[in-house]
Image 1 (cartoon, rainbow, N blue to C red):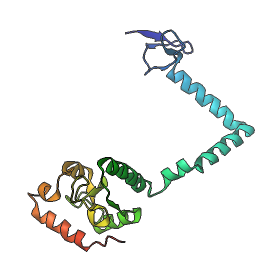
Image 2 (tube, rainbow, N blue to C red):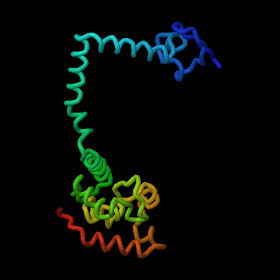
Image 3 (cartoon, one colour):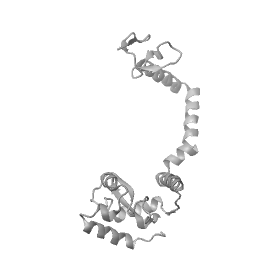
Image 4 (cartoon, rainbow, N blue to C red):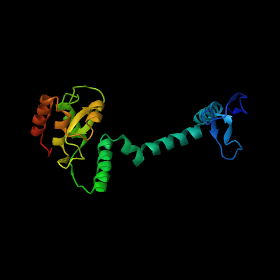
Length: 191
């Protein structure tokens, strides 16, 4: 293994990008300082800037501008995951030449979880819930992303079910299938 010596701390370490940053201008393609020395220098410089009143104001202004940027605000919005899901779904549907209804909001997702006591509708698990299409999007029978087709499911059940029809996937557990169908038939798709 190629060993490289840091010119700052004089330690010899393996010459990989795990220990040294990449630098295409160097003959070996690696930075002359190790990552620890670079981090220590960056921390020292930032501490000096924070201590300087002029730099402190500049850093605070940069932080304010970043916090008010549209990209940051969109990431912080509660319904961004639902909106992102809609965008991904619409692209996928366009690629397949399908058009399906998308009437799904963050509030509807909260109501759906509350209706199932914040647990998986298939197995009852309470951790790692995600939004699952009861009738999968890949099925021609899928009504779309609407409240009467969306259920909370744990990651395990959601991955296990995949693109299978619920009656096929739950063939061994007909009572679970009947309970879910009965619940979804009472859900108002317009709310």
